[in-house]
Image (cartoon, rainbow, N blue to C red; front, side):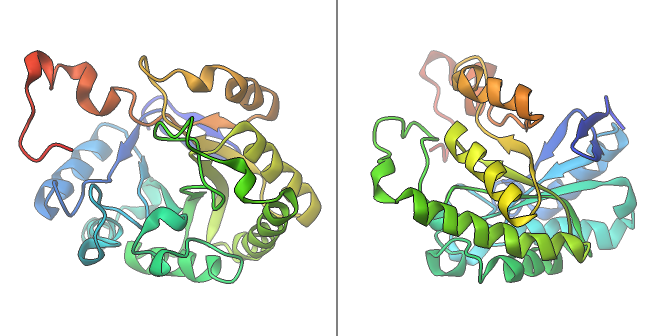
Length: 256
């Protein structure tokens, strides 16, 4: 395992294999080669999501990334060496449950559907891809309106989700619970909901972080340090901008 780190009670590799292009820009044979190479290098922590591949997320490929990882697991038989993380889509998931996102009534089925596609009996980390109430992420800093939902509505939703996840964790299908694209208030509210319901406590938050996006360094960093919540940073190279991929005005084919 490469540079092992603690994530709650989990031990994960310090580098994670991201898979969001598997099944679109990355065809299955190339995805298999990447997974083989990652495991050979000691990268045992792999992250996916039910809405992958992106971008764009289309109905025809919904869940395809998890299916490719599941096919790799079935082919290689090395599941016990991995720590797999996946995510439930929020309302902007598009083709996930007809755009309804995750609810207390649907989260158990969402977990089961991911396990079926991944061909496994559990995931080490289950994350909520987007808050159901909306998000500041992806440069929505000035357009997100927190007034669209009341505090009571948010709390009821969180209590319902964690009550369901409490049973899912007890059944052994999920080992740890995490968030993604979440705010400091949202994360603290999930911690409070865990106290009320006895549901799983947040161990991680997957937010954008890198030299060009340092928002986490303010209130979220303080929260993470005080509450023992690990940042799983995505887009550290600014979607390729910092690699020189777009230097001199170059725009690769099929770029967003």
